Length: 218
View 1 (cartoon, helix red, strand yellow):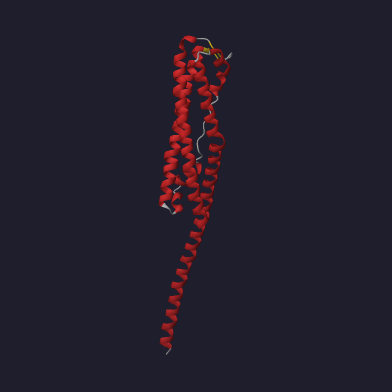
View 2: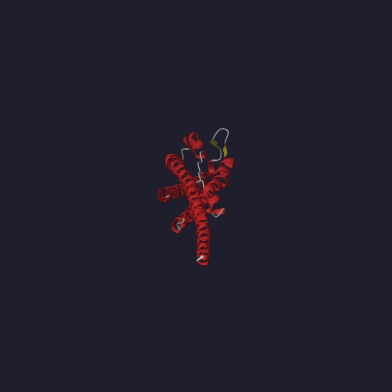
């Protein structure tokens, strides 16, 4: 009887140890999951806020500002086509008002470099983020660069060689065809950039919705 009791007591102790270890692992895992959930919400919320700010900047400032810029370029082209150089001189300053913008990717770069992108637990969303930040945003940087370089290397150089920038007056009127062609090419670069800005807004809005859904599930 005592022997059976002893074995039963050992069995209870053994079961107690197993349950204790299991409970410890369970509590630890639950704490880890809860911690990951909080971190995921924090990271996703930060990305959402960045996307909101970028969308607002593009929609309320950059896109309308650059569209107005192309209209000013068109008006300058018309003046050159009509050989109205004096009128062009009066409006020449408009061509030097360049506006560029690139979405903020610091949060995305941070979570990818740290490996925390896996906290999203959504491979399709991870791919969309990668396509956006490593594709669409990088292309935006490139279009901004191309416009800025063409502006400095072609347009500004033409004005340095053929005009008095302190007076904002063209001095060499024999090279206006080159100027007209240069402005025409430059305008197409600005157009392409604006089209890409609009694509960024569309993709950013879609990502914002997907990320918002992820926060809601947590």
